[in-house]
Image 1: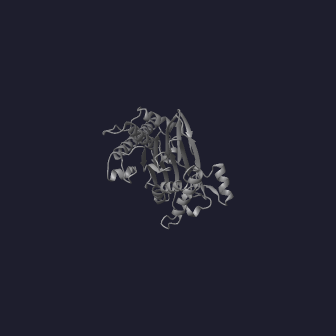
Image 2 (image 1 turned 90 degrees about the horizontal axis):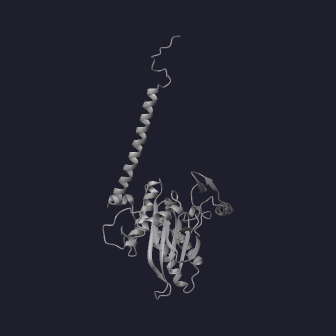
Length: 343
């Protein structure tokens, strides 16, 4: 049988020119993708400076003591990132409680809440958790038992959420910091995180609650639950954190009891970073502290100030924004919420 060498249905080995042409196309494709990535970053930057629908996309949710949203309020930055819905919430309540009623023991409250299944539990925590804690602190005047206060406040928050039929299967992590003149108290329930920079060293103030953490895995299995690898280690193949507020259907495997750390303030304390896992998934503790240190030193500036404002407040706000932008650039696929507390 004779075979026509010109038959287009018969494949032949690629020629050198074809290989070169393919290589050039591949190179052009890489350049195109890089160009699109730069355009996307520029688009996000434009949106971060806009308002109305543009502001909704970036979803900055700065919340001050008056209950109003102030996009220039220092310390915090929240972005929706690559998610369709914003499920994070943050809370900054300066002087939220005065234990002795004589202004001698005032405390500031900071909280980061990472919702899942919806935003309602995170938003409820933002509005209520600091109030529950303040009420508990006023009841226990005198020496403060921080672990007892935090555990009771988180449990009450969990009860309130689970009694609501509207919430359904939603839940939220909660990582809060209470800062006084003498102490730094952090309560963590979930996989958000608090990190302290002290004398140039990075000091973790919380330990992520992941289902594959040995002690958490043992607790879940002892309660009759299982951890299943379903796009990552998850409780019953559903939830990627082993502790949260809400998640009624996953009790008793997922609990709302926080782990509490109490540290005395020292002269070398510089700042604290409180952030959701949208940041920590792509940025290490050391790198985050390194970036904030440079921002507070004025060596990294995300956006120059066009208004008269306190320089330290501006640098703190700048540091929070730089961290969110860096996490986006590093490919974070989650909502990103960051609070920076300059000590």
